[in-house]
Image (cartoon, rainbow, N blue to C red; front, side, top):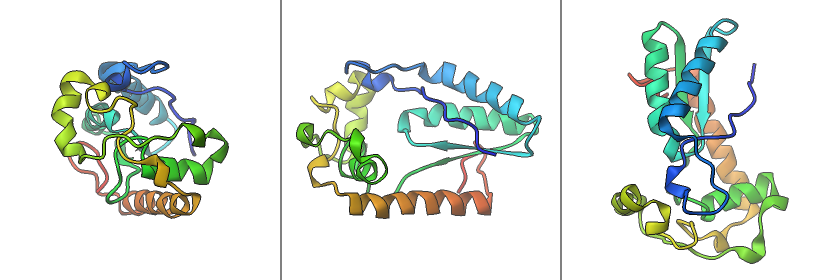
Amino acid sequence: MIAPPIGYGASGEHESFSGTVSIGTAALRLLLVEFGRSAASWTRRLVFLNGHGGNVEALAAAAALLRYEGRDAGWCSCGVQNADAHAGHTETSVLLHISPGGVRLEEMVPGNRAPLADLLPAMRSGGMAAVSEVGVLGDPTTATAADGERLYAEMVDGCARRIARWKPDRNGMLT
């Protein structure tokens, strides 16, 4: 069975950008735990799929608690090798593949292209606005639907392999 997606997450780092709504890490963790406890009554195994780095702390804590309680829970991030971090080539290409009408081609501008590891200290203290005036980490102007099709397939195949292998680490992350 596939449950409906949870439309909110821990996105506090984006709050300086209009339209951002974040429920925070603590609320997301609680939501995932209660969801998992409820779902455990009708499924023997539970997998959370994630597409946002800000959710990782809540996912790891929730899956670890669910596992501690005896529930077979895990989580998997939908990522690919060498992806840029936010609204750049990778994510824009995937959107051009799966939902091209949602991409505003005329508004695309390159953002900060430094490696995420270099940006994290400033992001932790000042949010996304501290490292990108426009909220973009990468370059969406190079995105194509063809790249999106390939990247999307990599994401799906990677998650499917990790789910089939079912080797959760101590925090439930599928490896």
